[in-house]
Length: 237
Image (tube, rainbow, N blue to C red; front, side, top):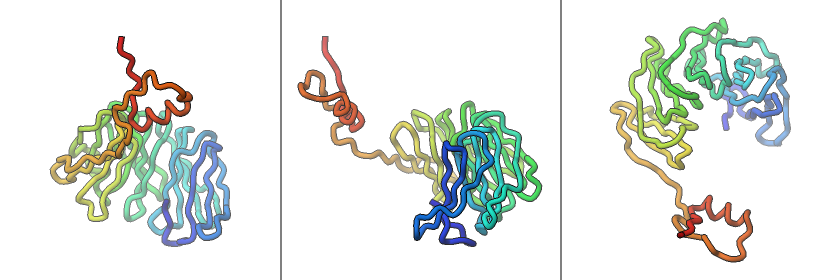
């Protein structure tokens, strides 16, 4: 959840109802509904000063909104598939967006112009984030995280280790560690400088490998819940 500096009492949400909503975090009241996208809104981000909001959508566009008025003042075109994730640079001058078209695009906030396309992933790019004004990280369904130099559009390193798609990436406040979250049910911590995996975090599953085959009285819902918590249903011949 992101609270903008300019409007510290506001947060935002995106939805498959094709809208973005601004909320008062104290009262829970919806302050504005921003309409304009023609498909699911996948991601939203405030500019560092909180005055501008960017949204991305399955309609393959990004939209820039004036937070004060709720007005859309720019629509950016260029991706050829769903736009999954978006982030502002620390200075607020550049936006990075990631897409199902396997690219990360860089945008000039003032002009709405695409100023760079980062190519190298081999599947959908679900998440993107700035480390600083010059480095971006992206996480993909190709099971890798890539670090990019946006001044040259060059891939600096590829971090491999997950066994399923990567949904999310985030940097530590000091920028020395990167975290990646995957459908393989782990979070990996990476040394940004060396690319080394420092640690793998895995949630505990209290019924790991418990065989529930033949257990009497379980409903389908209960079986599903137990399997989610690690149980298996293995029937021996």
